[in-house]
Image (cartoon, rainbow, N blue to C red):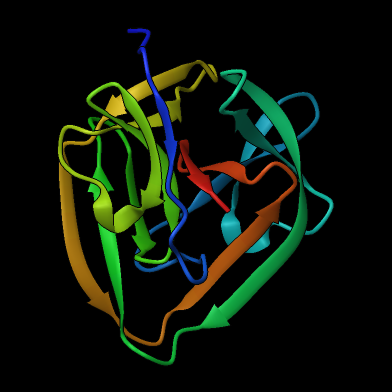
Length: 165
């Protein structure tokens, strides 16, 4: 795994944050007994403990679900599907995530993600990876239900990719 040098730049310019559940299985790693187990994002409840990441300390941490939003989109919304070598995720434009571009940490809307950027992800053994984005597609969606857990430290993994709540 390549260690990256970075300068932290966090940009927060979204109005609301939601994760769409359109044509995809969106899984969150929830603490089970004895290990982390994938669960549908729609099934995550307040009080659950999910896999998270501390951007300042650069390590995996537990985080508690402290809130939850579930809503239906009544207006068309932009969605962005991005892929890495072995991961795929589709998010609404309002969703943000931390990623690296030119060895600098950026946190911004998924709409700013470009091919070649590196997202923070975990492999099946929960080792942190910096996975290169290989494709980004923009689409428009209508009347879909979106799910958005609020996390105690603001970050959680969806489909093993770190996103901001």
